[in-house]
Figure (cartoon, rainbow, N blue to C red):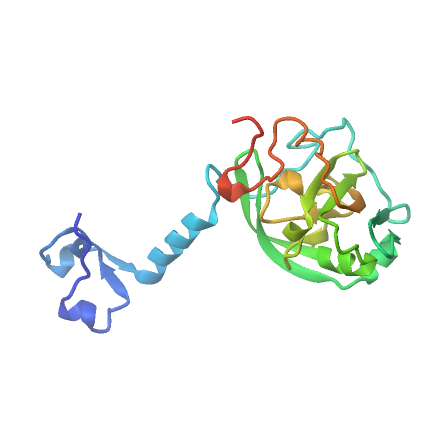
Length: 241
C-alpha cells in the first residue's frame, strides 16, 4: 500500500487539515467527489486511543462493584463508619501515626483523572478520583532512608505491596471520592488506594494499614497466580505463564 498525501490544490489550500483517504491508497489522484475526507485530528485521536489501552484489555463503562458485580474475598464487605475508621501508618518511620477520618480529611486534598485497569481484561476511561496523595502520607510519617517497600492491609484482610518508587506519582492517591461522589462501599469506601499504572489488585480497597519496610512481602493474590509487578503495559498478569 502506498501512503501518499493528496497534493492537489484543494488539499494544499483551505482543506490542508484534511487527508484525501483514497490518495493514501492510490498512487494516482482520483476526482474529489469520489474521495473520503477525514480530519487529521480524528486520525491522531484514534492512534492515541490505541496506545491508551494496555495489551489484551477492553473498555467498559464503569468499575465493577465488589459484592454486586464481582465476588470479594469475603462473603460480606467491610462496613466501616466514619467515626470508627482509622488508618495506621507505621514501620520504619520517624513519625508513626493513626489517623481518624477527620485527620485524613484535614490533609491536603487533590483531584486526579486517570484510567483504571483490571487484571481481568477490562479497563475504564477517565475516572475522577479525589483524595490524599501517597507522597503526602509519606512526608507526614518520614520513612527511614533505606526503606524500599510499602505494605498494605485492608479491613477485609486483603494485602498487597509496592516498591516505594512506584508510589511517587501525583496520580497515586488514597481516594475517598470517585466521579464527584463519595466512594461507595462496593468500590472500596470509605477510602482506597489508587495506583493507575498498575492492575487494580495493586490498589487495595478499604485500606486500614500501611507499613514502610526494607523488605517486600507478597500479598493475597501475589502468593498465588498473580504477578507481583502487576504492570498492565507489559501484560504482566500471572506468576506462571
